[in-house]
Image (cartoon, rainbow, N blue to C red):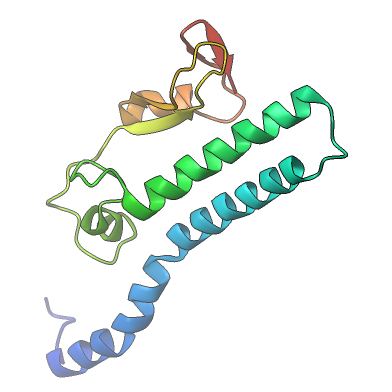
Length: 150
């Protein structure tokens, strides 16, 4: 390219900024982890407060605690598979730190919490990206196994 005349200067600039770029690439992961930890702490505080006797409020706190623990587990261990959004190389490609041409785009997923009444586990609904934009958008209702989720 005609604008690329000083390869050595460009290489030095890229190398000098690599450490900070690598650190910034994990900001979203850190924010997700911090949010899940905060949710866990708030739910645990509710459960540890014996002055709260409302059964519904305590069950809701248990549900939030399970969700937070599931999210933390997913962030720390991923699914240990190449198809996970938190597979290290895919994650770094998504954040723009690594080139992403070797990683086909995954469908978008919506988290559906497990139901206590049937002891189902937490699940993720997957949709192709072009559908997920409308189905999983703000204020959209997602129907799954006879229930509506917002």
